[in-house]
Image 1 (cartoon, rainbow, N blue to C red):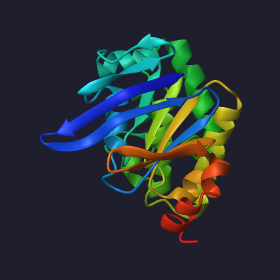
Image 2: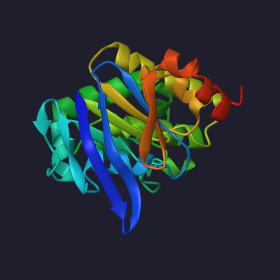
Image 3: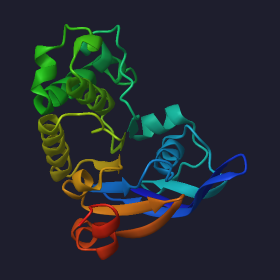
Length: 234
């Protein structure tokens, strides 16, 4: 679904990413793991088209999209849930969801709305509420559901579980796993909490100082001595 090859980026003289190469496959959750400042958000902003790399290429379903504007990437099937969600607080839940499918035909929008309501039933109950009145966990559900309204092939999520209570994290994780198990979407999950990421992702890349220092399946990373010591405190 996604192939990133040799991406590099700098903020002035500060190197944020150095020769990053990775891939994400359909029907799988790929984790981008690392502490704050490791380069994770820079990477997803480049993939989403918000930033342009200094070096390297991005291929989506075999097509080179490196020079494609962000709005065109949405049309291609890439959707980003940014850090913090960034919902529209003065709009209702339903209005937020509709904002996520402005480029879709009405019949597609209705089908996508039914799909996200099946994943997050609480949003149907809250559809007339202002988004600002939702709990923190419900707002994260809304941000993910809004991204799904464009019917993406690649869903990128930047720290979706930060500040969310464990019971909601569990519900979100199950919903994401359910989506991937149906095989119609690839998820790129950015997360600094490795214990959460390891329990949901299929494969992961560990970032430190703008570089990939480790990669492997979830089980391989769980059993890696460095990961256990440095990230899990075991």
